[in-house]
Length: 265
Image (cartoon, rainbow, N blue to C red; front, side, top):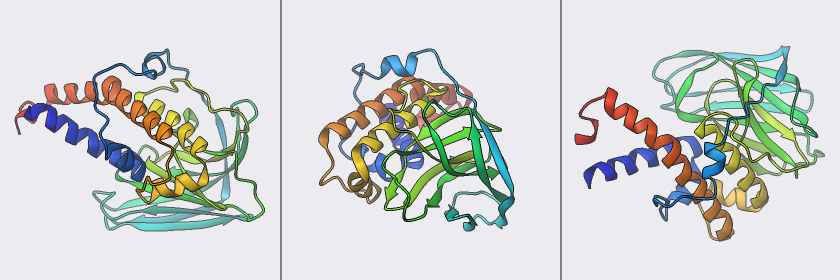
């Protein structure tokens, strides 16, 4: 049916924008099935929002007007290098962008330790294409337990993000401006609903990528799946399928009501 095909196309665009290569690899074999998944309970559970207390290093920041053609802001803090890359087509108009280093974060999940991060402004700015927040750590750093995170405004809606690690470099796709970075968390990533379906999907996928390990993360980033554990791919498909059914599909129905004629195009 034309309507279902359009929904599928819109879903693919949304997931590819949010997740990049991960979405491509997972979607290449298809994920849209009507059956409930084990993740339904997580997505439909009572949200458990987490608010953290970021402490900003006012002395370490980068500022630049970024054109729609894209741009890069780079800065150093101690032995860390933090780079924000905004690709061509992410912005509709020029934006004055500020990147400030985060010094520490209070109220992190139990056992977690802050490693590095940045506050991106203007806060709340959405991107057509995801930017990449790259954090390069000293070569002596231990990276086995690192997990990416994001928060909104001044620390609300804290949640984990999918990321890609290669040696001492961590790359974090950012779909909007707020705060983001990496923490060390030896324990398991909490399997909870941090707020919205999108945040829940990202947090669950962060757990999958962490368990995949660095080698499989590199393959996913390149859009390959030769050596990817098929069980992890199946988990990712289940997460994305549930996100579609409980989040994206509902948003599309709202869009259809507010934009009559969408489904007929």
